[in-house]
Length: 361
Length: 88
Image (cartoon, rainbow over all chains, first blue to last red; front, side):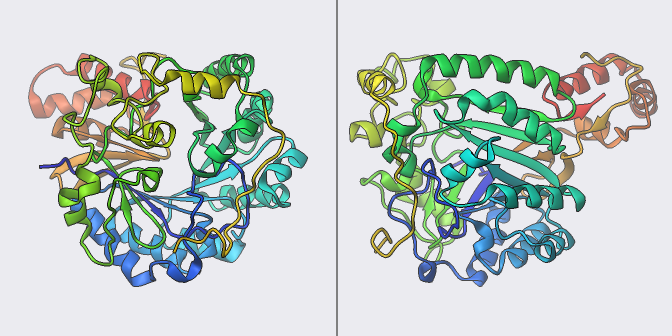
């Protein structure tokens, strides 16, 4: 019998006006005409709540690219889900923001690319930074809880201090400083995004100091750059333990990077209830518990802490999802990580575009 | 910063106290997280309104439980304050 899940990340669309090269969406994306219709999302949110889900992220892509976000947020609120709109801020007009507030949405997370607006637009692959500033002001004015999220990489990590102060000047309640995790587009762009060890260590010091200084006003969450760590990050409390991701076309995943694992079969909420998928599906059961583990994980006391790390990362880098996450310094494949960290930097970005060519068929 | 009997605790602006009908248990919800609570914990948090001191809260609970709970309330709320879920 599985635990009850606590968190649902609904990636309601892959459409997005931004083209960030660190996007964790897969390279093969879901086209607009394949997206789950409103009624299916509403049914799934009710099923999620009945299953025990407490937290909902309305994410993407850019969730505001869908016209029904307000309807989805309203249904989620009525279910009692604590709902976060995870947005770039582009498309958040005053009318839409007011409507979202009126239907009960509590929390908005806006991404920023940099404190330097010119660099921010370069990373976004479009002119977005000024409009984001307006969206932030709107969110504050309407009284939403506000989180700012900044993905960190080689081109902006040296400005972590400025990014923190910018978020503080906006009156953010929360700031997520997320060092890039290398999935999807980010993995493709790894050589251009990878920071140096020196950058990582000064950034950590700045974040630690700021965390203390802003305590009680702005909560700072610092997501570690796992390639520069000794041990891997824990996989969302363990595979199939608390977390569900839904793709825009309704496939249920135990982790947003899971579609890359070719040995898994993903059931779709169009055909199966979320409860069945959680309890019975092959994908959610594949790495539950620790029976699947090999050495060095199997006999390692840390397996209760980090669950062998990330299955998606193990697959993406070694071709076998049952291997130890290569980030672990005890793992036989750690050299893959060290080589990536030491590799010559690239200066070109492969921007994220949803085109007919990379649409999932 | 540790809390004392004189602290006046309030839930973080982003945190919300709920009763989860699925788990039949009170929960404290906040962005990207949830703490499953027992009945006593929920009773303490219900009294954290940014007006009452911990001493006031302890007095109310003492009437229910007929024993001195001040130290327990200080410790419980300090743990949540450490996680930035309660402000004191």
